[in-house]
Length: 217
Image (spheres, rainbow, N blue to C red):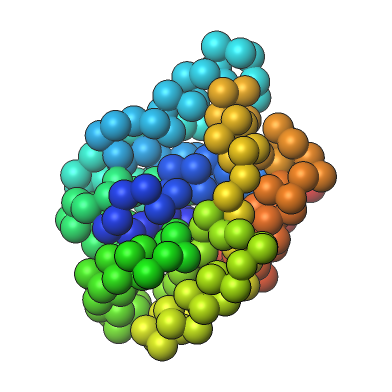
């Protein structure tokens, strides 16, 4: 199964979400490859930190333009591949959407976050038209349980005809602290609200892709 974290806007939480998902799939016993296509290489740095700390985790590699032509043979050696896409870079976004089984599109809940989704939504609709079996969902990030803004954002985004995952990621310190320990939030702070949010999203993804996941003995 290939899961791509996509979206044209920066600061939406793609890399944080990529690390969180990849590490949770690893924690569940899957062999996991995290592909960093962002020139900033934040996910690769996380992998380096994990290696320096001696932490067992997903395999992390960097790939650039044209990665989709090389990824499939590599992906066959893993249960789950997570692709971290950079902001902008429409070519990489399109390649990820044409390669993935599941696309997760992080978005903050604010009005400006939603306004900036227009190009991403258009690109995603094109991919969905070409690949009707592609599972797509917008992931609301940086949510605050004390406000109703996330539900308002959900209502607006659902009008775009792009599904919205039921799971959300809150504005939580654990998401920022976990990478320094070379792990995702579910291993860094098990039982925390952040961990529960990640586990809920992985549960959602797995329910849509059960045939694509090899049974772990």
